[in-house]
Image 1 (cartoon, one colour):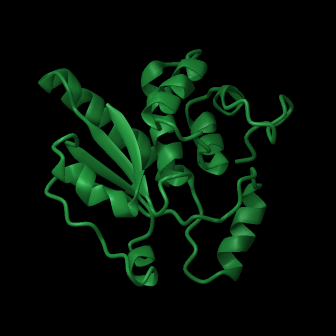
Image 2: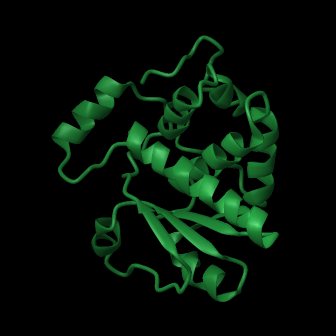
Length: 186
């Protein structure tokens, strides 16, 4: 139901017929800034959640994210409204899957390795329900194929808080940079 890819793979994935809906997790301006890249042309419905890639794989406090946003022009840090939008798209896609028997949602960002992977994990964990975060992460690993998923930890932390998971979503990642004592900083 949920798959991920990078910007340059979107058109081919959509043309293959294996995608019913697209969720872009990146600022529109990123396409213009990338020079050779352009916004992919797709016929499927597309939702855009504008969040920047901060280029760090660590969990960053809300205060530090705010400082980054204030100092770097054009940076859009992840927020509860962004993650709520992702959850809304996932729940609508699940409803369409129930209606149509299947609904394939493609999540993409620029590289297809952090923001889109976080969005896919957030959706899978939400749909799997509380207590099934490990299963959702295993589904994410399958959806990413040979890649080792490394979701944007700040987006996951925000989702963990919104969904009331008490750190379980972060814990399921088994990431060495996350200790059991870490709780969502948002």
